Length: 351
Image (cartoon, rainbow, N blue to C red; front, side):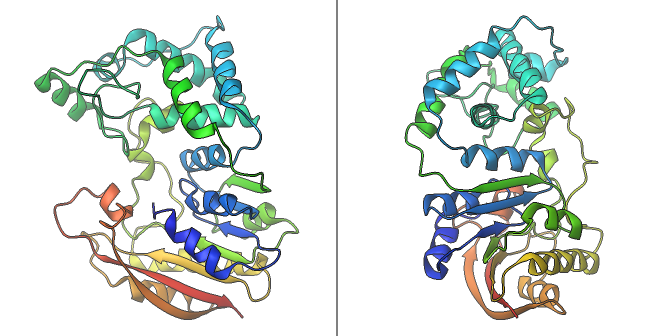
């Protein structure tokens, strides 16, 4: 959730010949997209299918808005039978025809999303699944009044919509897709070699499989902060569209354990070791790390401890300000009135 300016600045400051950028916690693909803008090959890893879908949509090559709209139109013309989620939330969240079209797209894209056109279409839909209404009652999103960064919890949403008298917008799914396709894919940056995989960076064999014979030279990332373990639950609607459950699921596994600080640090250390093993000599690691208000700790202690006994030598730690500057992780996922904790950027080099 760090701003695009962060990886752009790191890459511009550090770039050298034959660079390969890796993000082992790629999230929404900010690092990977920054590398693409600069024409640098990039790999991404994340345990969340939502993150991988969002990142993949930012890295597609050689497609046009017209191709995306044509693909969506073809899918929506299919006469296949699809299942519809039931309950008050779904009745109030979407107009019946909108939900029908979303279920049709979901059914097809969960079965086949291998082409770049379909990856872009999937990214557009999950980005438009929920968001605010306009003052005129219309919307560039599919849903009733909602936050755009996280999915509303069903019981709260139904109560809120009823109290406020909000109704889902009467929008055309195809028109929303068309608008967003034009906005995001009218002028694509140049092609870059890229690879995005869904999996656990704590797994040595998985990291090896992702990188193969390639040697990352620059790793830029932001690990989940200790205690932030509800990413999929907060993104449950997008997870549903990708084939997940039609209700909030708090049991979904996460990439790092949050049962205690020591196990969390040990897991993070595994990731640092795994990426060091596949990285080039003198590769550089830059990552942003902070804390959330209900897990009071000094982020610098976690940085020091996680890099201990790894091939990475810590060069410096820089104050990166707070999560409120750029609405980063702790601000976005923990909606707390308390002041956010200062974040830090760590710079390390592979020995």
